[in-house]
Length: 162
Image 1 (cartoon, rainbow, N blue to C red):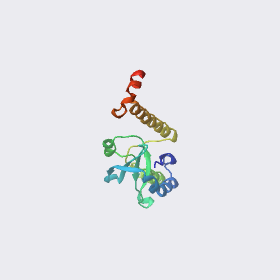
Image 2 (image 1 turned 90 degrees about the vertical axis):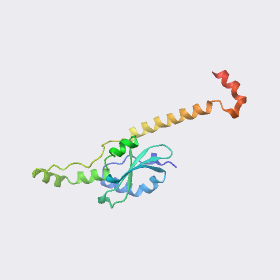
Image 3 (image 1 turned 180 degrees about the vertical axis):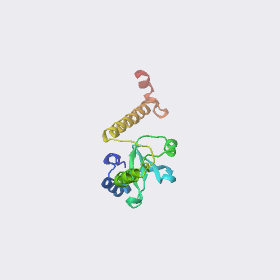
Image 4 (image 1 turned 30 degrees about the vertical axis):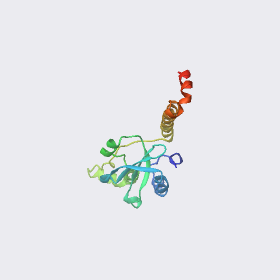
């Protein structure tokens, strides 16, 4: 059963990532694994019901437990070439401000964690879900109205509607 609507997009904050680690087993129960990127320890999932994409990540600073977060629609191939940035890694990067400042004084410029950056607001997520649901209803309605060989007695009604 889809639980995607029960979860907001993951905020890049330490306590939100920690909470999502606890919620992940329940969320993952309705997801299918569609790709794995070993070099980033990332996984791409798709909800069986609403088709929302989720990315799984692990970060040593959070105990190496997997957590999932909603990501925008992307092809499997594009995701494999560059997964989305890991929110846990972004949290760790942001918390190292003093260390980063010291490194810059020494002429070293640390780089942020790899991955596609995105920001998925709850409103944008809802618009995308509504669009997908409208497409699904449209296809289902079209299929329901199409004449079927096992309903030949309705053929005359179909002809009148056209």
